Image (cartoon, rainbow, N blue to C red):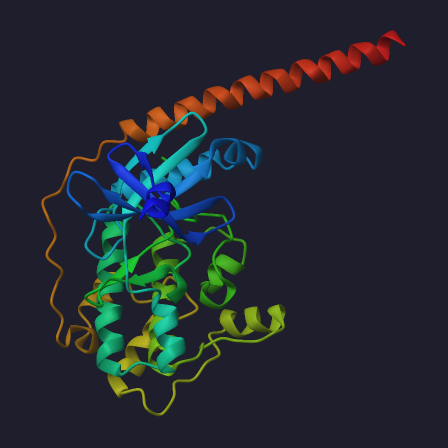
Length: 319
């Protein structure tokens, strides 16, 4: 027991324990809210590393987005805390693993099970879009399952918020096999239509157990995606085939929209709309407080760097 005590430390009202995941810029640790006993996941980021890799804006955006998009099928962000050297992002602890692992383990899912996950995915994505948020990296690896088998969308690291007066997005991002053709074309694209395409690829993968577009050669893969060169396996029902073809339409202008998907007869089978809580007022004060501090440090670093460059130039001129 003594060694367990040594392994935990307190951050605010949370007792932080073992590492449960590790990424390039963060460690994810298991923690417990000492006031309520609730289990949470805490993403720990080192400020100096965020500064060094110029990740401040991206991480600030990801945290702000997760606070804005509160929904039962989206991993919940509880709060953001900071020490002198670290940032702590307190998240809902989701215990069921990735949907991707479920596909790997089972090979493919039944049509009913696939439809259930797809309905939850569409609910979550529709909510994001209603808040002006586009995920841009939807894939089974970013879809988690809770202890009741409910889907939770995670990883908003590549998400986009609309800029005032700008209707189209221009950044090419996401995972190639799940990316819409218009995103690959390096022209402006509609974030909502691009997310819908990715949802269609996910539905196909759930039901087939493999990707609709796949090739080791990237140019060939892009070619297949651009013309939507794919075929549905024989076990797909006519309703599922019909909907997938409407979603995986290479022309975003005529591709089915979220409202169309929600009204589709195949989609509506056994559909129970998710119960949404009251619309909460989202407070971004804690995010601002944490990042103002980092941005001040960034300004000082840039000033110091500028001074050093100036001194080097002066010493060169002096010799």
